Length: 133
Image 1 (cartoon, one colour):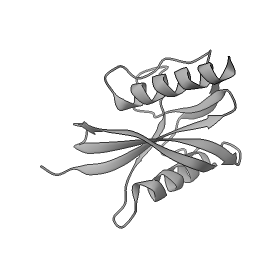
Image 2: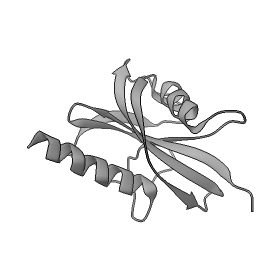
Image 3: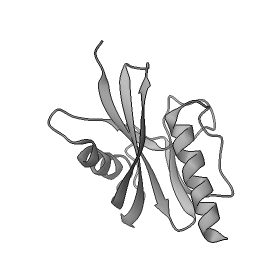
């Protein structure tokens, strides 16, 4: 079977995480940023490129989280967390309907389990809450 590698990136800033809406998501749902790996790119390079292209931000401290095969559309997701480095949110209108920083204690509707996006958000938020105690 053919697979299309993709990355997912959850950006952290203080006690907030960056979540975005695709026009294809169900109403009110936000998730981590994601994008496909181009030929010749590493997953790490793609993570930096996708965040810059989709929301205009620079990131640092990229950390591997996990991976998951996903049947829609034959993708293999590689998930990362990253720290905010610089920039203001400027959405790419062809890909992002909305993007904003959410406090870890006030999250919007999220993807369902068992998606890696939900696991990535849940684990990261739990770790961030523990660090604040």
